Length: 346
Image 1: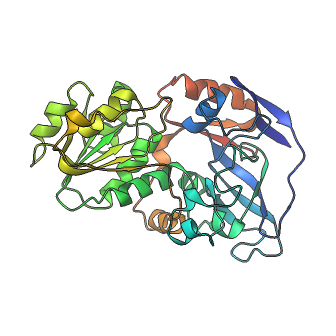
Image 2 (image 1 turned 60 degrees about the vertical axis):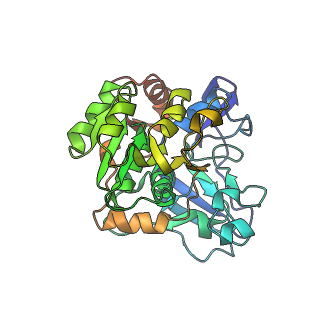
Image 3 (image 1 turned 90 degrees about the horizontal axis):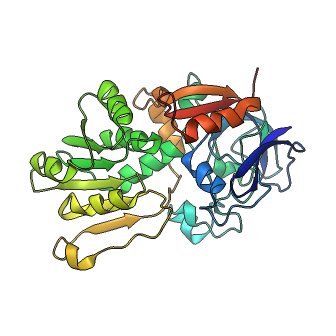
């Protein structure tokens, strides 16, 4: 089968690999029908993910059809259309039982697919702990509608959930990339009074303005004053930092009101510093870390009910055999790209 492979730092390549098979009773093998490219894949390519293993098939955001299941798998069966969770989790350890599935203590727990074990920018993928890692797509929900459930939409849903958003709150989202848009959609589910999106790229700001006209947009340079003017208590009640730059990290706490919640789900290329003397007296609560993708079934129900729609994010579709061109487009952000889908069919 064709599989897009991390060869060495700075190099991915399309390679022929054996079709995966069930290796453990809890495994499933999924025939990938639609995958996507994520910014985290670019982090692997450029050496920013030390745990990534050269030779691994990349890709951790995909949907497909179950082909085989291990003897212990009960939640899915061959022929089911499924989303694949970005995280591998056993469901039984302390962290899984408390919903912190990103911290699963299994050797392959957390983000493994497309990083430490073969992922889904390929024709087939083996999914460990399939009862936890796969969710059946409801009838009437298309592959495109379900594509982001296991990663960026799960990230946005989790970020919005832990941000403690209340009705009438002013919510600031830093970043209008794919994860930022998903975070925006999920934050709106909590009924805030106002949502502000801070984004330096005029193309991305225009994307938000055209599709979500009730959302306010601002550039980073204007953000501190703008947020204060559009907040009741001198700053945002909840800040969700998705952009992942040194400037956005600083804006996150600068634009928060005293005693606000600042949720950081961005992945940074370098360490960030909290200048505590400058922050003294703001009494902020920081919540940080990667996604805990334990809400995928609920997300699929919301999609089926028409309350979440991420299909506008898919601006380009490429066949797997042209994935090099897809990566080049996505990495260099040409042609107003937001998300690229990769199809293995046809």
